[in-house]
Length: 309
Image (cartoon, rainbow, N blue to C red):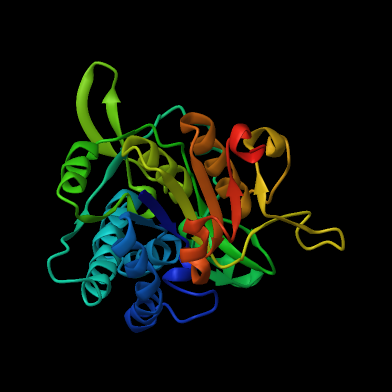
């Protein structure tokens, strides 16, 4: 099968861990054997989150006040390179030497009129207490929202419309490469106007699950997997009535509410993929990635005719 796997932030940096290069490499090194096993059985395309990394880069950039801080699109591009480099290296250390790997800097078009620009929701950067968040908001003009018991910066998260590098991604897949692309949801980009074909970056972070779903459709994937730090999707999560969902159809989950900042985008991305393609999507723990691909773990989203078979 051709399998697109979107790695959640936990594969790169666990909550509360110091945001160091060593911590990131160790987490990717732990994930690499599971991903390498998939790559040896199937054609693997990888994408990944970048919320903690892009937030850290923004904080570092703002600390140097002699020049204007780099915008988010530049930081998004930086994270594609630095995270892709480590993933590529750690996977390459495990796969046969003849297996090619490539990281593609990926620009993704967004709509300047997307309502997300009026309501920032995408968490980036480290966690803060309320007092520190208020201080940073006053100093830097950043927007903060509650993330569990802590506070994190939020930025606009517009919908992905088009992957500009989709042709070279397909060319690499034709040569059986393991491709790492659309990292962090891709670099948000737009045309200056309808009649001006000049591209420019956008201050935003695209949700990597939605970008991964678009990528999975565009490369004609057989399966789209979102690997996270929970074993499945749960309805009424965190309540006495919480219920694990092992298998569902898009029709059965449409209209069911899930947390907007965490599981909600994953469920929506899975439903979109299955609705558009008639193929399977899955959400679950990275530790069970092989079983998820086999269809025996995680939450499996399947077309109605498969569910009834």
